[in-house]
Amino acid sequence: MTITAEQLNKFSAFAECLADAAAAAIQPHFRQLSDIADKGGRLFDPVTVADTSAERAMRNLIATHYPDHGILGEEEGVVHGTSELTWVLDPIDGTRAFVTGLPLWGTLIALNDGQLPILGLMNQPFTRERFIGTSRGSCCNGVKIKTRPCDSLSYATLMCTTPDMFETPGQQAAFQSVADKVRLLRYGGDCYAYCMLASGFVDIIVEADLKPYDIQALIPIIEGAGGIITSWDGRSAQNGGTVVACGDPRLHDQVLERLRHVT
Figure 1 (spheres, rainbow, N blue to C red):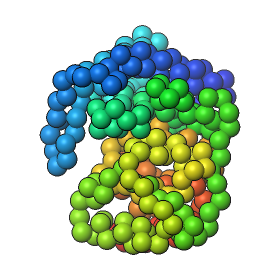
Figure 2: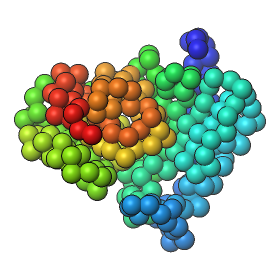
Figure 3: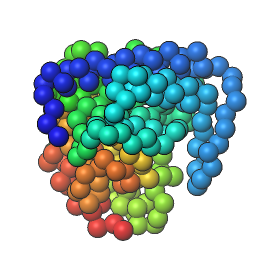
């Protein structure tokens, strides 16, 4: 689907409206004691009223302004539209950080044209940082951001939300083969870590067990800043699963060689 520059500007402005609506729903609940439910699964997967209220606010706006567009959201699933365009929403990526009072979370908003995400936004209302990426570049609060050059694992900073996301011994060993070679390894960060990669403070992110709504908004942000993000086998990362992001394509080649043969 061909999207003109004028249309992309319009969609970007609308994505910011969605981010504002989500922030208004979320902020009253941050660092407040509230009920936390567990969705269940292999790991503790919390959900709060902030998650559900924020997604509902965004869905209502999309239904009003673009009723033909599809929606894929973490909390309410899929609504198929008559258009090829689909909004991909994660109201709070990093809910574990959210419920522990850490500001390492954000609202993720992507627009997928039926082939790939063409627009990505990450909003962190507590720190007042908004990252937006398109094919024209990426910025934070209107200031252009850029990944940093790093062509050697021995100089690289690696981040991963948690080692518990690696489900198999093969995945664990593959991640460790990268971690053993880097200068610095840090855990935590969720979507915030990807934006720090796009901003030139992190070199590698290696993760697994991601969903499409966890990653689609982050792809245009990283690519617009000059980075590269794929699955472990070098394919598109938009469907989630195993993901590797690097600020320097030369580094990505080295990391991918250590990850791509894992099943």
